[in-house]
Length: 395
Image (tube, one colour):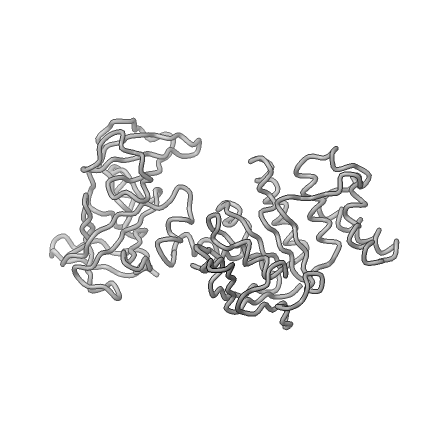
């Protein structure tokens, strides 16, 4: 296996820039996932590693070798695609061994590699089957085995689970994690599915509009997003956002105020526009405020829609200026709404007036103008007796 290094990769198609100045390094044996919305440049970035796309600017290194100008077959990579593309007239053994036979490996070596790969992906006893006789998950395993037999330096996987049903995708996620552990392989994985990115990766690289937004372990991206885009994209459902203005003793939004000391926030001053972010699981009914170390002051709201999800219930809250039935906007982008997550046994119903609090230790603040994160977590509550606020950055 080998590490992969991208230096200032840019890819243009005429006047359109698909990837802009992306630099990152994937360590030997690491599982890194490129994640982002459609058209963000994640597949194009991976294709520059594979050699399927030549960058307009920048260099690609695999190990210590500059492979920017090498053909795909000379880079020591193997790809698994969303479209498995098995040969329908060949059985499993012939599909897996096809590349080896093209390279004129002797029959004994071909058999050894195919049987070893089949054992790794749990296809024992299926080598004589035809693709049409196999399930989608089994066919995907054949595609992965076809990559394994090449003993590549790097595995490149472009949304390989996208065509599978939901239950099978969950199963195949665990299979890919086991495979990565057994092979100690360097893997670059592309997906738009956050669950795949969060559950399988050592690190995730979040892209948007062709630019790398953040590369970090999944929980770092979740708990310490570098900007508004990452905060809104990572996590399902999305983070709640409320735009506001810094005042002498806090942050004022349209519907509530959070006490804080603006002088303790770097790079901003009183009067600046700041966006507050808080995840649904960090919005709580006031009855549970005592369980929080530092809750905000209560916020008046009314429940609008409840979505039971089994292990939790999503509660859409309308704040003072919102009206019932106005939920056409995404709560994450509307300052008049909040999304709250509660346990299934919570006594709550639609149309009910409620008071909620935010967990100060889980509040995020962003510069509204630039979108960049200012801090993650207000760890101390206001000193009500003295009228001052003790705010610390929990970074």
